[in-house]
Image 1 (cartoon, rainbow, N blue to C red):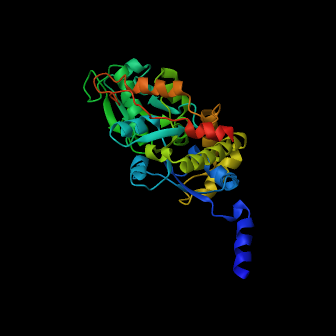
Image 2 (image 1 turned 60 degrees about the vertical axis):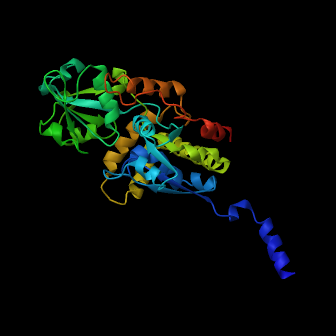
Image 3 (image 1 turned 90 degrees about the vertical axis):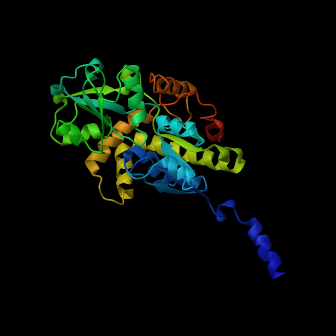
Length: 327
C-alpha cells in the first residue's frame, strides 16, 4: 500500500515538478548587449516560465558557432544569415527558425582625410573587414560595385581586421567595418570626432543582409518535441527582447551581471543597448521571407565570385515561430 500511495502521489504532482527541458544557446560573440534579450529572458524568469533550463554560451574570436552546432555543442545558435547560408551550401544543414533582428547594424566607417567621399572612392583603398563569417556581406557589396578584392588599382585591398579599431586610428586603412552599436563608438571613445568620420550603412546602400537570427540543424525540426521546445524558447526570448527595448538601461545592467570577463563597461553597454533596440524594433521573432530573399539576392550578386552560388532550399522555416506566436 505504501508503494501504491507513493506512485499515486507522484502521478498527482503538477507538471512543474518534472525536470525542465534543457536548451543550450551558442552566441555569435562575447557577452554584450547585442544579446541582451537572451540574458534578460534568463534573468527575468521568462525561460523558467516556459519550463526551460537555458544555458547561454558566449562566443569569441576562436569560436565559430556553425562548428559548435556541427559538433553537437548547442541546440540553437545566433548567427548572421550570410554565414549560415555559406555554411549550408558547404554541407552544414542550418535552418533559420526566428529573426529577432529586423535591421542591419553593419557599416563601413572611413576617415574623411583618406579621400573617401562616396563608395566610388573605395577603389585603390585599403578596407578592413572581420572574417569568420562577417566578411560575406562586405565581399558581396564589393562585388556589386565591381571592385575586385585582390588589391590593385582597379580594386580594393582587403585588410583582415582584428576585433578592434586600430587600423583606422593608425591610418592603416581608409575604412574599417563597424557596427552601429559597437565599434563606431570605440572610435569616438578613442578620441576621434564624428566630423572626422564618414559612415556608409549597409542599410542605406541597399546591400544589408540579415544579422543575428536563430539557427538549428535541419534534421532536428522533424522532431515535434524539439519544435515545441524551440517554440517556447523563441517565445521567451522575444519577451526578453521586448523587455530590453522598453528598459534598455536595466537590460544593460543584466548583461553586465552576466559578463564573467569583466571586460564590459556600464557606459558602453547602455549605449550599445540603445542602438541594438533600434535593430530589434518591429520584430516579433518571425522571419519575413522577403528579407531572406533580399539577403539571398545580395549574396548572389557578387559577380564572378558570389558568396553563394545558387538559391538555397529549406534554409528557413516558420514552423517554430508559427507555434510560438500561436501560444
